[in-house]
Amino acid sequence: MPKINYKIFDSINKIEQKDWDSVLGDIPESYSFYRALENSELTGFDFFYLVIYRDTQIESIAPLFTADFNLDIAVEGWLAKVIGFIRKVFPRFMILKTLFCGSPFTEHGVLGIKPSSKDNPRILPLLSEGIKDCAIRVNAPLVIFKDFLEQDTLFLDVLRQKGYSKAESFPTVASELNFDSFNGYLESLASSDRKYLKRKLKQAYSRGKIEVKVVKDAAGEIDRIYELYEYTYQKGATKFEHLTKSFFLQISQDLSSRFFLYYVDGRLAAFNLCFIHDNLFIDKFVGFDYEISRQFNLYFVSQAYNIEWCLSNSLCYYYSGQTNYGPKIRLGGKLIPLYVYLKHKNLLLNLLIKLSVPFLKPDNFDSNIRK
Image 1 (cartoon, rainbow, N blue to C red):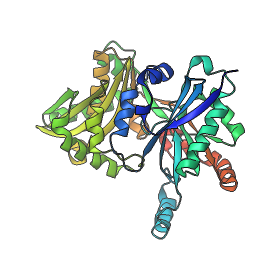
Image 2: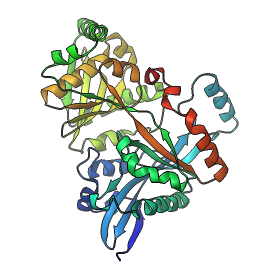
Image 3: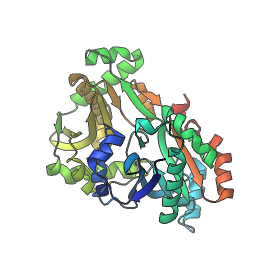
Image 4: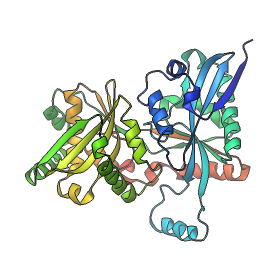
């Protein structure tokens, strides 16, 4: 009988790229993407890789990372104010060091398993055992399998027998662009939404000169790009990762990335960092100068430009990510359900997590999802 065991590595450089590619396949967030993450000096993040072997052959690779997780990440209103007040005395109230299976930046959870091993009943228990081992090593009391697609749950639901709770995560948004032209896309929208978008675009282009540049290497604008990113990060209600300037420089080395730069009267006022992979367009990170962006409707300008760029380059799917669901849905986006699995090492707290799951549904926190 072949021997199945695992090893935990603290760098992707300790895994051969050919082995990574043979297990994870052709995915948007490639080997070079994870290497860029490691080299970006992201504060509060450490990256690990759980590798399962059958004898000497790699059968599975699970990207892992540690980060602080705010249990109140989606809480708003008076309860958020109460938690903020308590944190003045106890700064880490409802904040736990967490080991995540997945990536902080992928559109959905990533877990590499060779097709020939997916039916092997020993793989998932060993994966669970290895992740528990890693959580102990890094002193993370909470483990989360982050944002997996519905089809992945057919495999991952076995985790519930290991004490994990399954919960709905905030969905991502995708648009299927089966149109011959941008006008065809516009015609697919509801009449009121089509008129709304046209009005926003007409207003934008009538108020000044808007120029868009699509570049691979944005090093010459990196200071302004990072300034725009910081504006947006600080304004955002939900904060998880905080990128570094080094990240934006590193990621430009990934062949699938592009910077979409939006200039208003010659000044860089907004950007999108996007990934292009096969027939996918993934809108990853954004930054806005809000004073200029509101005046020139740059959010809608960028959404429209992205879609038109997809159609011009024969890309069929536009992924616009989590959060800010209202305008994305209005512009034709569809919600893609995602799921998480959670387990706390403390039995009592793990029971509380199980009891809390029914109240953690995203539509309890976002009226656009609820609608």
